[in-house]
Length: 439
Image 1 (cartoon, helix red, strand yellow):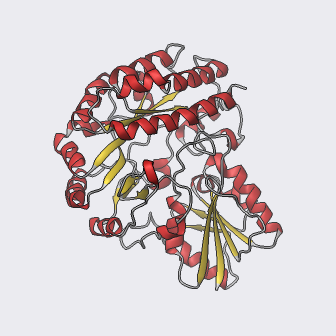
Image 2: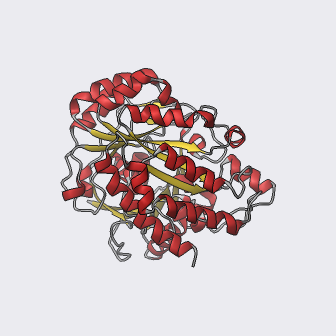
């Protein structure tokens, strides 16, 4: 039996790295493990929650990498190759810049692993590993996928939540986002029966005071991407007694029937990309469904259904000026948004934003470790880089101050007992990050 070691590297500079209070499971490697045929002994190491033993035995090493973790991924890959162990790399960054990654590994997987991984392993066993594996003739279908084995994550110090996927792709193609280029410009849905079977097979976590029984996060970029599919799916999961979170576009508020189904099926919160309060900025990025003059009404409609909101905002767009931070903070407090995530605009490789800023000679660095949405890696138009970073840190700290937490959560109809610990956890992470960034 051969040994397969799958690795998710750590980004020490990012808010979502070792500074983040909530350690999220890496679903991508579970999917790769599920695609691995019998005859392989699988170990997964996620540096967010455990140390990596660089002397660990393996016949083949697979490493996933996003942009902010890719430098660490290259260090790990180089080390195992010096030990004469074959290394395969994949993930968003590797798919965007395969030639760069090839300098550090024996083979790269471009795009989604389905349809590629079993063939790669066969080639490896025949000692015929190809330098590049990519899909020919379109993206893979999402039917008939093997179910992830969550026992591989047993006793790892993750947040007690299962990640489940029902959809891939997005047609919005926002200028700063890599989802459309990575997963296609249309939504692809898994068969509802297969997702239901996966949900029924999940083993509940038991992690003490912060546990929430049958807690699931649907990682789809938009849980209502296909309204017909969403209605059927939400209706069918209602009897599973889930406590679930997901991501949705702002136009979910225009469909009260969908909101009602969300609540009846156990939705506790939705991550929503508001991005900006500026109509000009929204138009420039191409997010057509967003209309900032409707944001307050959108928040209220979602709250009226007892669903909390994790609102996402980005700073550093060309229309942003010194006042953007206070305007955004004022809106978040007034709207009583339960959890807020702020990002610094980041030109990830292969996005339209990166191509435009490169043409305009506004890229400051290609130190990929800084491409974490917490650092300024380009020249802003109406702010200095220092002012953008200062404003970002200030508003993040202010929104997670104790007075702000109580002001936002007090009197809301959403799950306050859940969102209070979430805010305290974010507060710890944000204050540690801000201290690091400003020293």
